[in-house]
Image 1 (cartoon, rainbow over the protein chains, first blue to last red):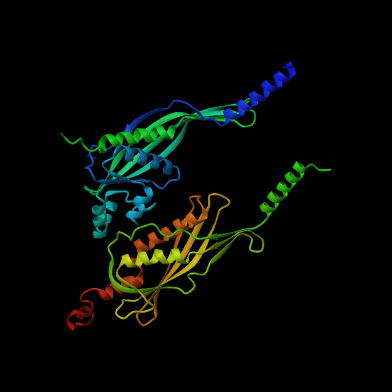
Image 2: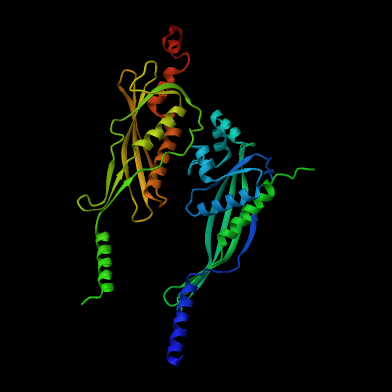
Length: 221
Length: 205
């Protein structure tokens, strides 16, 4: 191959490679920890009991609530784990955004209704988990002007508030914190995204802590 | 002479430009409500209920200026509104009968759709739905009216936002209908011993 054609081919394939790189998320490690464990008052579920996992109504919380619900559902095969929609539909209008009881007094008002108590009993609902997410950028981050790159450190906190249906009160369900790096860099004109899965790490940390508490005790043989 | 590729390219650009300048027309038909009958104790009343005659009439919302709108949304909320309120009143009262008036009822509730608008752009998409509930005494006189509004702006498809707005209105109805002055009067009249209290001379002092 003549040298000019060879270099053109090389340059072309280089551009294709860069373009492909633009589509590939680059993972980076995250660190996650439980800042506050779930309340010691929470107890293991009995087989057949159900829980509902809702988001707290904030736009950022929807994804992490779904993530926690899925992880709990896969870890609690003997129990039903209602997702946000199913929980809200079944217990309408008590679990709508803005109407979920926030304190013991509001929970008591909900339990004044025999219709509510009956519905909860029909479903064997033991806990209602309300999941929230807060995200903060840690430090100033930095930007490298030449390549147009920007990276920043994120800290996500996923937290759970629990309505204990048996005890008819609210309990803290724990807070997980995850930190990682997220960023964006230009390559030619497309760019690539560095993804550190901070939200995922916070979700898994919280869900695993809840699983430890909620998992039904193994039946003795 | 233009090549075929250039011709098609220009045609595509023209089509895109025309699409951008034109007015989009959308029919918004939200899904039926998915929520269960409210888990709230029913009020101890027997009521009649009916829907306003124009419930099925589409409500048209022109986004932008009235003369030159960027989008026209036609909200067809009749079926979903009917399903929503039937589910509500059947659960919120001890007995609710679909009728203009019914003997032996505390009164009649007339449900009318009074507002529906929303838009997709600019984001986040939103929808607002409003109803007026008119409370009629058994003799047909108006005991009171109540404007209820629901709104959603989560940025989803317009039909979904509309369904959420209707659901928000339904939530308000579920929690607040017992506090409406007309309903409170009906409850007072229906309370056991009401007649005795108001007519017994000894009670009047």
